[in-house]
Amino acid sequence: MKALLRSTMVRGLALALAGFTRPAPAQPQRILVIKPDHLGDVLLLTPALRALRYSQPHAQISVLVGSWATRLLADNPDLDAIETCEFPGFVRGAQPSTLAPYRLLWREAARLRSMNFDTALIARDDHWWGGLLALGAGCGRRIGFAHPLVAPTLTKALAWNSNEHVTKQALDLVAALGSDQPQTQTLRFMPSAAEHAWAEAWLAQHQIQKPLVAIQAGSGGAAKLWPAERWAQVAEQLANQAQIVLTGGPADAVDVAAISQQLQIPHLNAVGQANLGQLAALFGRCALVLGVDNGPLHLAVSQSTPTIHLFGPGDKRRFGPWGDPTRHVVIDAELACSPCGVLTHCPRQTKPSECMTAISVQHVIGHAKRLLDQAGTSI
Image (cartoon, rainbow, N blue to C red; front, side):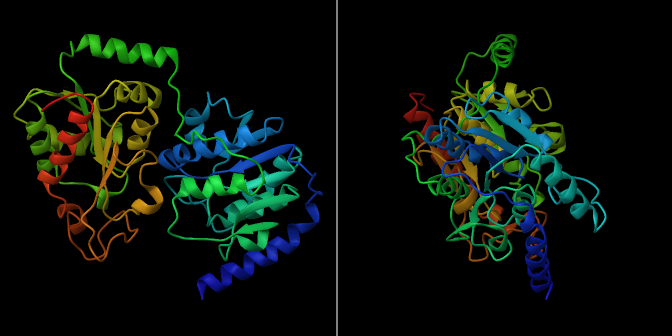
């Protein structure tokens, strides 16, 4: 019933906003890419942004993201401008009133309408709010996916496969404009010179003598965590030939402390010490980065560093690493109930999540040794 009501509401609003649209030119001139997500998903958009610039070299390309994502795209050469929006449902913390998303929709549509975008790509397949925003902004060409809640707002709805990788979806949106795409489709994030200098200074300060292996164990979703004692076992078995560093943001401090307390080997703790660009620069100097399903792991992928991603409730088909699967490995237990998509807790009431505890230490170590051997670092 709730889905039916929302679908009816979207259709009604789409009809009401249709009068604002302008005719689309034969070729896109001003393109708006709407992407409401957080760290990992925004990084997974970057191959499509490169393809868009390649295929539309003369267009003015802007992206609309949350304020939390601007650093990820700040130095991206494929963009002309970054616009921000505090997307309803994506702002972390207290939720606004029921009517607040619609008031914001009206204000943002008016703001964007003044910028004369003729084409919008809705780069999240279920983002009905973004579809309405593109309609209200007057975009005469609106491309997205045939999700029931989004299709009424579009001029071109692509076939929707709910299991498809989000990067492939974004590339399909660009291809729908009818232009060639580049062969290079890797993630793109470029730390600044100052951020590279910070990483070099950090390495010098700690007198790193061995290949560096980072463990990024924290996650915004408690159901995605792997037991601290298992991370400690992995670290100890890799410590002979590698220098272990525990990384993460301030919110990861408790989870990382639980690992650190169990380690009997010398190790480094960089939690809370680096911003996104500095962390990327540090990952770029690592021989391997391991972690659960989280955004910083995609940051490591963007630096061409080998990675191991532990997946449980998250969907590896849609949100797994975008890159060479021999260098960016996904490990999951393939339980029948996984992926359930519930990231805050296990619906089966297991704690830690059964899908995570079913991943063995030896399985992780085996892949880690292979990747380090592959990079010329024997363990």
